Image (tube, rainbow, N blue to C red):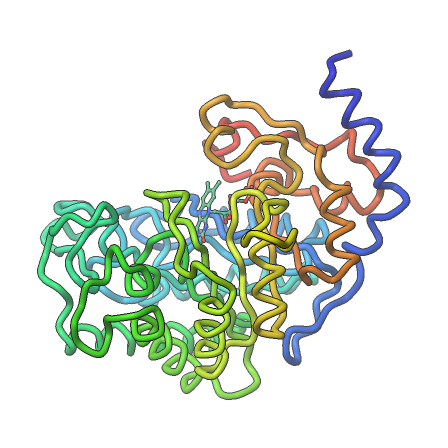
Length: 382
Ligand SMILES: Cc1cc2nc3c(=O)[nH]c(=O)nc-3n(C[C@H](O)[C@H](O)[C@H](O)COP(=O)(O)O)c2cc1C
């Protein structure tokens, strides 16, 4: 027996006594979730020409059938020619794609699940010449890529207004299709985050300046979505300090700065925050054990989702490099924090990608049956 296996077994015994905290109900606004487990948004690129098919609906349904409380879909694109650089990422506009999403909602609801689409524009991470629209130039606040290099012209105010309106249209479509709420992708260095981040936003007009001024785009996007869906429909936003190009990046250097940013976003109309970190146990600011989600909850008073290496023993990128991961190793620490109220909901990414029955196996104490994540799992939509 390997050392890994022994660790997992010991923790199986521990967790059997206390996983209850993960399986207590929770409310975001009027939406009642049966438990605390959220499927993290994961781009899968299995939607040819931007249209999610029956295989995509079945993929999400399997997670709902197996007890995931809330599914957040892979990033799905607002209407804009440069919204992504991959023709297999699903659109959130156009009759065919929206029909595909309607089937996803139907299947997830039939299995007793709840589902939010993650609304996305990649901004300056798109490369010139990328499909599906090779002629479309990447857009961003200052035309800078994530390294700060100039690639295109800054977005005009007219372009900003059009893109903001498309976020609103996507929110309206989500509500019409029967989704239970929406998540705005405001993390990881994509369009909304490019406005928030100093390196990619060097504007000197009202969309640039200090962090609060750089938040104007996010605020307008949230306001447009709120206007589109009315007061009682859940809107959450995913935020991260880190960027895909820079894990040490920070939007907010102090809790005070973070608190001011969150206050603006709450005022604009968000109901909660999805706080993206690569490892949920890492403290966000010196002098406290609270993680990013813990700080966001404390500062905003709103429901928060934590995420990052739940059910894995290695972090996001080293896992891809090393191609290994134990299925269970940190679940005890997670539950302690949940019980202490540091965060409200727990998103699970790769562990749930590898094992659709992750939530049900954890609930019933069958941790030794969990399928560990390996990069192989990315090849199919199982
Ligand atoms: C294959 C894959 C695709 C991802 N796509 C997205 C995405 O579309 N939107 C997003 O916000 N995060 C995305 N992420 C990040 C995950 O939502 C999650 O934050 C990350 O995997 C850490 O959680 P985990 O350690 O439980 O996997 C992706 C992660 C993976 C592994």
